[in-house]
Amino acid sequence: MADLRLPLTDRNVANLPPAMEGQYLARDTELAGFFVVMGLRSRAFMVQGDLRQNGERSSIRMKIGEVGELTTREARAKAKVLLGAIAKGEDPRTKRRAADMPKVGQVPTLRQAWARYKVSHLERKNRSDITIEHYGDHVERLLAAWLDEPLDKFGEEPALAAARHEEMTRDNGPAMANGAMRSFRAIYNHARKTCRKLPAENPTFAIDWNPEKRRDTGLGVRDLPEWFEQVAALQNPIRREFHLLSLLSGCRPTALKRATVANLDLSRRILHIPRPKGGEEKAFDIPLSRRMLESFLRLRRLAPILYPEEAKIWLFPSETADGHMAEHKENRNIVSHYGNDLRQSYRTLGQSAAISELDMHLLMNHAMGGVNAGYITRQKLVADHLREAQDKLSDYIIGAVVGHGRRPSSQLSRWLNSTSRLHLSDLVAADPDEVRRRVGPRSALRRMEVQAVRCQVQALPDQMLDPPSRRLKA
Image (cartoon, rainbow, N blue to C red; front, side, top):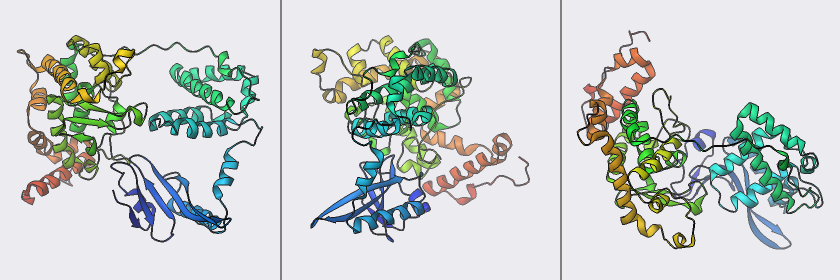
């Protein structure tokens, strides 16, 4: 997307669309050098100016803060201060580094060590945003009381780490406690590379780690009919297709929720995952089976009707601030398996369908051990061999529900075998007064919006709109 020029206000910044790929700039028309950098998920206030020192000129760019953490007015005020310093020949980056980094010979605090680890290790190695967020949550939330303490305090008193681990185990759960202290261990080891004053032995050696067991929640072939009936009963068609595609692709839910329209290539029959777990270096293409294509075609017809603006960018649009599905969890009394349960199901069903172990590694984008497997170029297998394996597995899964003389409910059969036009008619067929009685005025309003967009798209007469009665009580 080309760079923009507009007055930067809170409203204008909130309405900026995410970058389809890479980044673009939205420059302020009132203050030169003040702008917003827009990425797919990130939004940051920035300044840029020409610094003249010792007769030489250089252009410097600095981040002011994240959109949402600062208002536009606050960011502009800071931008004026920074641009004023640059105009005077001062480099404000030097002061910022001095504030963020410990002095030579000084033991860093956890805050300082975390800031360096984040930039020098995580960001430099292109770790995914989710990975960085997890580290940040561990340090800035669970270990917030330690942020301004020097690290040698914990190196000399490892009992502090053991005690904090026990507290988190009690208050936050065993897995979260282990995760937080593993993050602390990595930051401590990284800090010791540049500060030999820290005790050599990591304080986490004193921790009695909580036992962790891999979740065993995959669906078997006999469990599929009941699960499909549960998903077919969901009212939201976007969520229905999300759960189905989670099962048919084995994709991690976070990556799938953030998939964009630009990531979907129907002509090549692939869904590109640009930043999976592990970062950009682990980017890969998911080959699409015929059943997955049917799901995406239903999705691409329904989503623009339900969410006209959000569906221009996201495959799974929603009314959230980000514009895409934020929460994939369901009530387990309604839908028994979702998210990573379905990734385990994908692997389990792949074994039942006699897909080879190596092909399953490739389809799930897992690292492959051994010298021989390391010679395989995955991308060369996506268009033919892996797609055939994907087709075989999808047919096996769907066949266990609707094939071989099985009698699925009319609701399930309509979902999997009907066109998206019929699903759309289902959405607008319910009487709005009945919708209002059953689930309230907001759902009735949503039904009217769907009808209005349908009339506009299909050039239908406006008389089709029948607003819910105002005489009814909620």
